[in-house]
Length: 398
Image 1 (cartoon, rainbow, N blue to C red):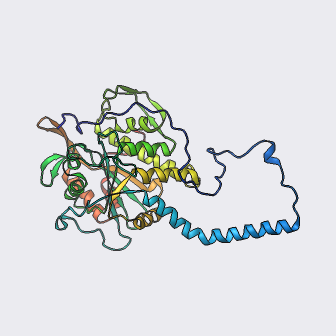
Image 2 (image 1 turned 90 degrees about the horizontal axis):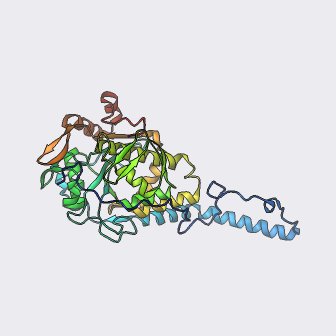
Image 3 (image 1 turned 180 degrees about the vertical axis):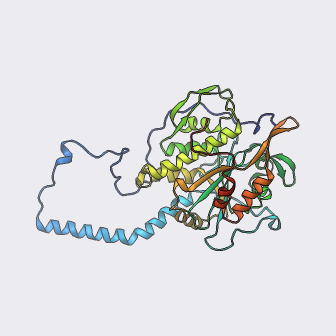
């Protein structure tokens, strides 16, 4: 057990140079539209007009074009299905996550109807491995007993109407009861019992049934950030990360893989330690969503393909989520915008020590109100009455 909040962390690699733009493995057959990634042709050749053709040749060309358009129209549904199968098929499945949790100990399913509210549990792991541990390229197991903890712990609540999402972070040092192991830091659950105990612990703490689990390691995080072409962040105050011997000057940065990882993982040298790190992670996630939805990613086939490749190749999900489930989820969330994604931190009651370990105490009364609101699918009423726990993300964090 570490005497610093959150225990030991994996040592980051040397910062990488910004990656070059790469084409996806299997880009769509259609020609890429003109964007900043692929500027339109200029110069004399662009002004050349095609030569006049004979009438019979024009007819043949017209017939070919019409046949092609009809074929394309006929294949639209099938093509969309094929693309979704391709991307969904790249997602690695984590076996038997929920099979190992006694059903009698699990909370009830939320609302219990088709289109019901759903709860996802996310884990960012600090696995010390030279090989990827999550995603399609995983060459090492995602969990080895005692080898890693869940460095980032997030629950995502999707409302039944799929119009809003609530992202609740749990400080990794929360002092809680881990089923079968007694009191410990919440991030120890993953290390002690892998994905099943991680899910069981969060269900035990919140009384909320987890529908699905997703895990990403730091290699996956770097790949996703690079696929987006980097993310802009603003740092309002200069800080020194003595763990990585790195000074972050106040200013705006465009961060790629390893630099982005250093930013979201820093807690040493920040005024509130892990609480500031949580706010940075939430801020970074919000910026990723803003970039994805507002910067032309969805309208640029090649850029969208890169992002989909990165997400589906680097994230692992539980094996109860089929390809059809992933397609259905993606379609149901198409109307969500960044303003409808609400970030918060579980209510806490201060910090202290348990033995030599620095811990964070959950405010049980306030947290229970939040958990009850999630179970009722009525978080807005909770926020109207009690406000947002811990963090207001109106400005960039330290």
